Length: 400
Image 1 (cartoon, rainbow, N blue to C red):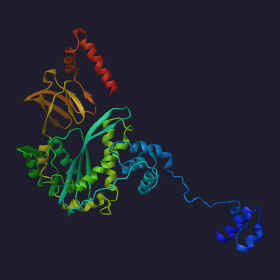
Image 2 (cartoon, rainbow, N blue to C red):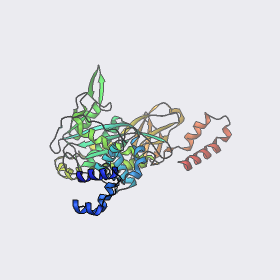
Image 3 (cartoon, rainbow, N blue to C red):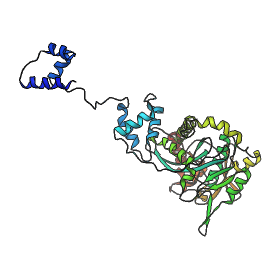
């Protein structure tokens, strides 16, 4: 706006003189309506106009999800586009919206050097431990995720686990080798308790893990203590596991959780990696050519058909793959061995077979005779045991 004209209009206004807008328009080559607006003290468009965003309707939900402990902005974004609205825009704009609305304080990341490896050379593994999340009924599920990542292609494998034993590590490694199509020449671990044993303050690799590495022809490497960035690729992959947290209150069963994690895994494998500019699944096609083949099938089966050791709990049950199976009452507190072949679970005490079950997805798997034994220790009237056992087991089946 012409400052001379503005000054003239102010003087006329203060003098209570109504100007000839048409004459001023010709003089200053402007629209008379514009001059009239400024005479009537129009101040122009506001400098900081608030533009509505398609994210406004999800603002409260975004705030709720970001308040979940351990969640990050990216995980909430991925949850929204997967479960709520696939048309909310790019992650960059979403992140700007979160910062603008003050929904999440920004953090300054620490810098670390990058380590690159050639195809087929290295994989990195880690546990994402003690993840807790509630289902829609308020039940808390606590679990671990085994994270395996090839160094060259950045191809990740996420595996749901309820425990972190040496057997679990071996199971997860074999599953990862099968998923990626081969075995790298070396695998980088930290000092996870399932990998090392401590004696006189010194950590040594478990003989069982050493034997496994020899059979599958890879070298075990350990990252330096207090230097987690040496396995930064798998640490970066662990951030994607946080994408499961916004599903709190959105699922029902453990099976649902495993399926959600699998979906996240597939999404990460097909998204463009910032460091390489390509998707991990595309680079895996090249890296797979350099991976070593799995050993003879007999060697693989010697590890997958192995026995496991576990302790019988006070409810006269053991846990296998998140489901419980009953044993006779007298073995409560004792250590038993589990042997799995195809769809059957065999439970041994020493060399005695004490129970066998068909493997199922049911949370509780009681044999009627085992349940009756438990009831004898909790009720006085033994005449009602049969009826009570039948009723309780039927109700458990209906509930579960």
